Every structure is written in C-alpha cells, then in structure tokens.
Image (tube, rainbow, N blue to C red; front, top):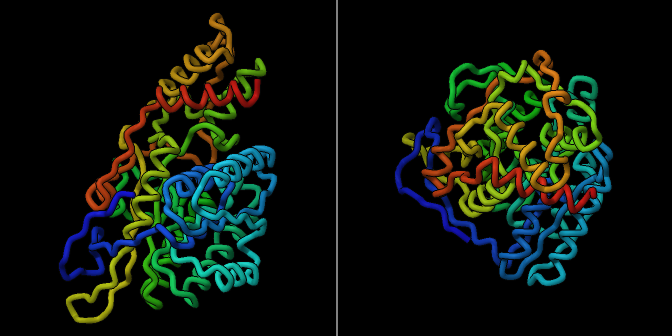
Length: 372
C-alpha cells in the first residue's frame, strides 16, 4: 500500500495541507461502517485482498432504501473474497444509531482505523424523509465520534459529500470555499459531520479526515443514482427525464478511484502537532475526491446509451430521442459539481483518472450479467 507524502513544519490551524503520520494497516483491526454499501463493499474487498493479516469489521443495517438484494449480493462478494484472504472478516448487522452496539464493537475489537461510510444517502429522499438523515448521519456519526473519544484510534476517516458546496458558483470547488449554505438536508448533515469531527479532533486529539465524494458510479452501485435508474428505465422501454433541460455538469468519479483515494488517506493520518503558540492543533483535514473533469449531462447520457447498446442491453436501433424528456431542475439539486482535488494529489500522490467511457462500459457489462 502506498505511503503518503509528509512535510515537517510548524502548522497553523488554517493550513489545509499538513504533515501526515504513517498508519500501517497490516495486522490491524479496521472498522468499516456502511459495508455492504456501494463504496464500503468495494473498500472491504480491496482491504481483504491487499492487507497482510489483521481483521476487517464491517457493519450495515441492510435497510430497504433501495433493493436489499443488491446489498446481499455485495455481501456475498465480500464473503467470497474473505475465503482466500489472510485477513479475517466479521460482518455485524446493526445501526450506528444504537450507541450500545457501537460501544460493544469498539470494546470487543479495538479498531485502530475507523472508516465511517454508513449514512442515509440521497438529496431528493431527504426532502420527504428527514428522520432517516438525523438518525443515521447525525446521531450515528456522533456515536462513532464518542467511541473514538474513549478508545485509542489511529485514524478516523469519514465520508462527506460534494453536496456541501450547495449552489456555489465558483468552480472548481475547493476545500477553501465557504460551505455554509446547503440546499438540502442531506448536505446539511454532511457539513455537520465535518464540524463535529473538527470539534472532536480539537477537544480529544482524534486524527480525522473527511472526504467529499463527487458523484460516485460503477458496477453494483446505488439504483437511485441517475446512471443506474436511467438504465433500468431504458431497459424496460420507459422514458427518462433529463433535469435542468440537460444544462448540468457533474464530476463523475468511478468507484475504483474513490476506493484508491480512501485507502491512501487511511494510511496517512493528520499528525498531532503544536501551533505557533505552542498549543496543540486539531489533527483534522478535509479533501475532495473527484476527477476534476466535469462532464455535460447530455454527453454522459449519450456515452451511457452507447455502452448499453454495446453490452447488448439495448438494441442498436433503440429510439433514444423518443425516450428522453427535458425537464426543469429538481429541488435540492445543483447545476454543476467540479472538484479541485489538488490537496489529495499533493498530500497523497493520487488523482482520480478513470474516464466515463471506461467506467460506464464496466457498469453496462456488470448490469447485463446481473440482470439479464
């Protein structure tokens, strides 16, 4: 596994890049929440493949926000990977909102690294189901922070989201940008996670790193994401709606790039340092993970359609124009997402690189195998 870069210097609390303390994952216990979710499952499988000894604890409540069969499928892939791994895998079914369960996991397994990916996802779902977001994204994350407070943890890595940028007009989105005006409850909970993590890092010296993911896609992804739901509708002969009349750009990030970024970050925790006044500074950082090449939504859809034809999911003479409807913007959505991932590249030597044609081709091939 790749070792992060580091620089020795006195740090100011306003510094965005900082020296890292190397974290060796081999032989350690890693706690991944949100597995077998989309990103979580792919992360766990990478860890099982690449770690030399140790234990991976994964947790998920297996709710029905989308088809639980897909989560069962991912869990099956994890269990298959564990058979040939030198790493022990333990899956726990439960919710992070259950504080006693979280305390038991930490007390029994003593994780050295925690990767919190469990969350209620989705911008539009948060409009009608706010309780789910408060319970999972706020109470659940608080329980993780409390457990990290009372147990020695080398590094807490947690999922934030590009949604925190709201309607920012300045692009690309930088972690230096002010993000105090969320346009959805989901975004507000993710920004709250960053604030809570910062306060716990400051008060209890917990090394923590937040990762703002940009529109993650790929095989066995979330069915509520546009590329997936559009494929399901087109394959069923139904039409698709294209929002903001197609005048949207998204920084689509293939799941393998996301996982690579997470693993590199896991191995480099913000170092515990003193500031210019000699007092401890919070070992805290936030990074974007996005390709830095936003794609026009109509171009993305055209690429998806070509790959669906190539995979044999749709016929070559499929009437795409007859199945498209241009509509206005949805509540809580934003016209552009565009990541400045220079901090990730500078501190960890990594920038996402998988393009949409390669990524959508892999998705289409998986979809054909899974559904047809």
